[in-house]
Length: 227
Figure 1 (tube, rainbow, N blue to C red):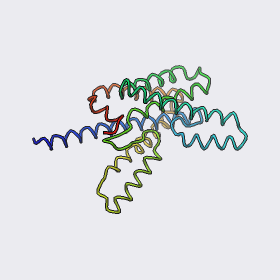
Figure 2: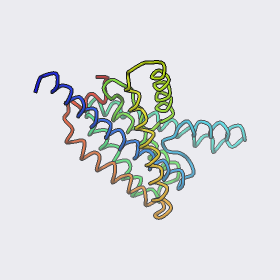
Figure 3: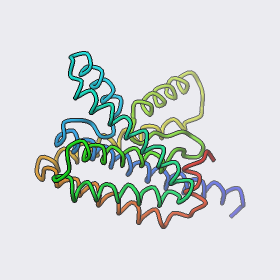
Figure 4: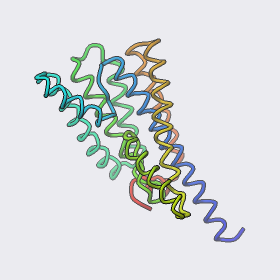
């Protein structure tokens, strides 16, 4: 096997592994978002929706509802910031371990928590998880916000139709597929098990954490910094 061929093979394996991790995280986000929406009444990973809902609540004079949603936006921002710090210090496994810990606490003590704490805890976890994979082979990828992924997919399609042969844009559909299928699973789980279905989110996050231990660190470091 030539050196060039070996490098191509390694790159395919590296890209495939990154896509599998990204798809699983998006599935986790979609499942948790559906569980949160059905059990709490608000989104836990869809901050565009919460921004609009906060604005509507403010316009309707519902200051308490608006404040609750603005607080969720703050929790999401803090989660993203903490995720970046965790990724820099502890790597992808560290980020996912923190996500698993927060989800475990919310699943275990959620029913006894005041609603805002429970809500913000899950939102914090969804913010954290975004730092696990930011790039795949240098291409920006979104995990819990699929509007950007769909926009990049559409723009890539437009450029392809204009004659651009680069097809990296195809991987942008992966987070959407993960989010959609995860939301379906979350809705089914919540309908059958109620708030206890959040344990499924914890189990998936914990399982993914264990799986990423097997990913070579030289690969996972590329998820955080453009490669």
